[in-house]
Length: 326
Ligand code: EAX
Image (cartoon, rainbow, N blue to C red; front, side):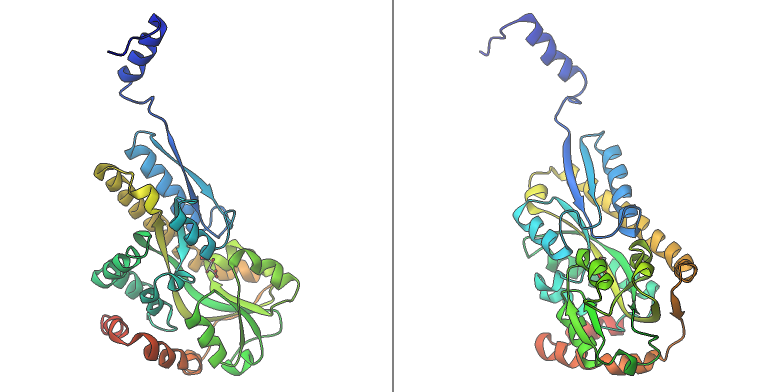
């Protein structure tokens, strides 16, 4: 029988039980992402944090680690696998290095618009791909959203694919994107996102490509004069948890995390819509020259060899399912 040393010890223990376990240690979880505070990803993290805190009665506290504070997206995904980071919202850019089946989502001009992308990712195909991700020492909670990617550069206006010729374009660490820009005549330079702003500033690279929410949140107008709305890739994002976190949760707690992820996706998508509505005007106000109308078919043709390379390596079964579903 455990004997308490003093009356004070007895009353302290009794008090903690009397508060319904509220004295149970609060768990602080790092939630990392590569974009700025209050960006589309950040709004998702904030919604996740609020929902989880409410559902868990304050047991779980989310600490947002924005703007690549814990490293680039590839580093953070590796961190989830070893348990040094607990949660992230990441583009699928580097994901294919861990889950090759996810590379199909990075093919240029695959999704025709936001509605089609969201419907497919929220449906059977998306759930199948989330399960595939979770087979690779990761826990995939939900598909979120980065947005349709466009090209910026500091050399001059890009009106046609020929204008990409010889441009040093930073790409994500993604073989499909690198192949697409190589096929179009550019010189793809893979780089972790936290290094991009400085590389543009120092003209180590001429340009980069990202969705409007990232271009605006990163203030790329400070280092890029030209934007062309190519819309060449729909960039999904994904909410991932570390297995070391997930395996320690009860079934009820796992349900809380899933509900929080659902709230996060809604908040991110809402911010993407707001940025899509207002971002181009903001970029123009800050001095960028924006080309809105391009011959997308010409760009689609220029990057199409990326499909041949992809299919030769990974087959076309999932690709055809996604194309047939829209
Ligand atoms: O996920 O690396 C990229 O260009 C991504 O779009 C960015 O980190 C947001």
